[in-house]
Length: 176
Image (cartoon, rainbow, N blue to C red; front, side):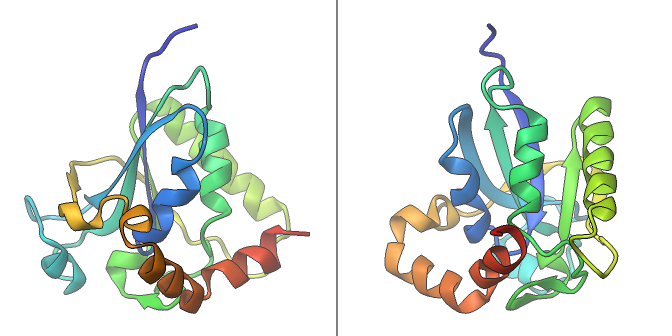
């Protein structure tokens, strides 16, 4: 068994809501909130929010593939988002809140494309799956106050997540 670390990068709307679902799994070494897919070096949160940098709010997951596979991480990802919404996620609207899978090698690309095909074929959604599968680019960690937000600001995180509509969607679509 190897302890080699790999990276997985996903955009799923507000990055605050994308950390906790991955952070609690064995084999996940670290989840970092940040920005990727844009055209400005070292963007700030305020710049990304304007929608002019092209970045997605995203999370970079460092994981041990011998403990948790990329396929398992993909399955977790799909269950956190509305893959049919290209205008953002839940109450967070705009380009920086769109969904995307950023692959880091050919295997990740193949697995991401296959998982998307399986989701499309499942009939779970009546609208098309619009989540993009894109080649990974430079990931810029967000400002420190965004890191582990759900741990540092428990009450605010809980309130924000509750009013977002994300949990209701997850329950309605995934919990049968």
